[in-house]
Length: 189
Image 1 (cartoon, rainbow, N blue to C red):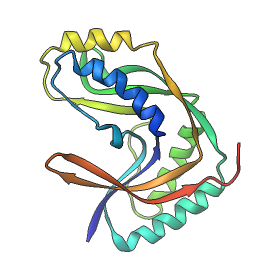
Image 2 (image 1 turned 60 degrees about the horizontal axis):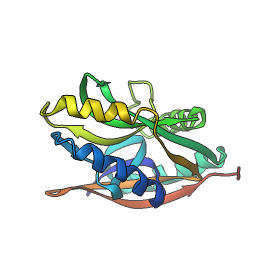
Image 3 (image 1 turned 90 degrees about the vertical axis):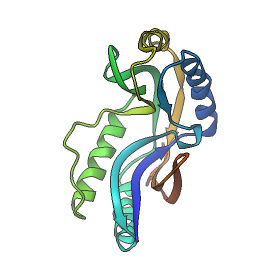
Image 4 (image 1 turned 60 degrees about the vertical axis):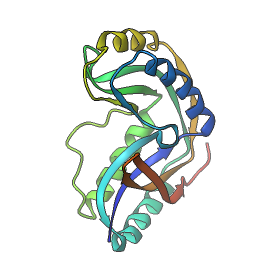
């Protein structure tokens, strides 16, 4: 049996609640966006895709080894924007700053998973939190206006103390995420 897996940094519940106060304001603009449910908010480090249960042990072993070489660190979540750009939004995101460590961690994960046969990411990692995916351009101008108001908003700081191997199950009501393992970093801040 194959599981749809990814490696991520989980967010504290308090931060998720804070973010969702602003998501509700964006929703009020009447835009056609599929919003990420609060319980599914996370920072993706590596999407593995369909993964056999047999490979999970090897993945975990590599992540444990890798995590021992990393220290805990902090990230600042602030500002909002869109990919590919704010005039033609497809993905709505929040910014992730103080990100030198997360970029290094993601690179190490990408290299380690390539050793297990997973394809390396072809794009440079740009740390962000996806909060929604635009389905149509209905009320696009209202969305842009609201996003601009969030450009300077500070959503909070998080201490990153571990990485998480997750599975995602696609269901009619949207994806549901389940924690498979949580791997702590080697040394404290």
